[in-house]
Amino acid sequence: MKSKFDIADLQAFNAVANLGAFSAAAISIHLSQPALSRRIDKLEAALGIQLFDRTTRRVNLTAVGRDFARKTQGLLDHLDDMLLDVADIAATRMGEVSIACVHSAAWHFLPPFLAKFYEAYPRIRVRVQDGSANEVLTDVMKGHADLGINFMGAEESDIEFKTLLDERFVLACSRHHPLAAREYVAWSELKMYHVIGLGKSSGNRLVLDLALAKVANRPTTFYEAQHVQAQLGMVEAGIGVAAVPASALAYQSEAASLVAVPLVSPVVERRLGLIMRKGRSLTPAAQLFKSILQSS
Image (cartoon, rainbow, N blue to C red):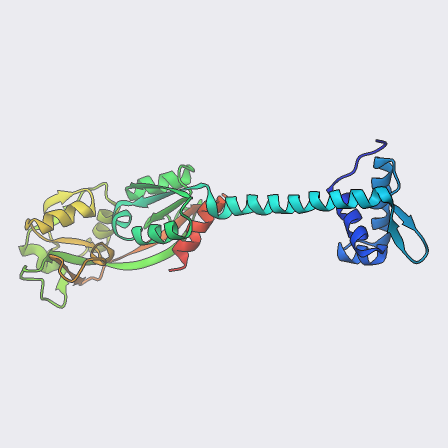
């Protein structure tokens, strides 16, 4: 062969072969007619054969051109199918997404979204890394997780924070506890009850400490746990009461043994958000999970 040709040259040839005219072919593939002619000349030079018989009124395929057109059409159709298959696999059928998530949200907030994602994309693997707020933030910043669900990160310059949920802290207590029937409970009223608190490494503990720093007669901790789920287990066992994010009790049945009572004076809230590292593009699988989260 005297020179090389590429896919664009084959597409130009295919357009002329199908439409029977250089002018119509040029319009169909968004080229000028001279540019199209140069592509056909280049292809014929590379093959060392004439593909078209040209007259002033019409362009006809030569015998070799007709055979080449059939094979070219098959090649281009196969290429289109292959590209569609690759896009389909990348977007919907394969891959993996890693999600770092604070413990409390991993137990109560995340599972419904995981179920929705599994229903839509059953072949995409999901890895949930539940940890403390600091651990989740570190995993996302270091690239150990594609996405994070956290209430920390909004102030970080390298982190993009998109709000998913604003939720208040409520009192978790037994259905038979004296406070269970109350419309709301002030923080100072908890002074007389056994309160199950959180350890210093907990992000929820930090949120509460900051919010209650100026509250007179703030409650003291009787028992202490590291995670909300452990708090709820102690409450259910009758040990005491606990302040927890509202979502921790949101999915209970009406027959559940625990109730949530709003806490006031002050109302304490946390903002749960989707965190991503700025400047880092997401994989197709992570992008799909992000869409599921933000569609709620």
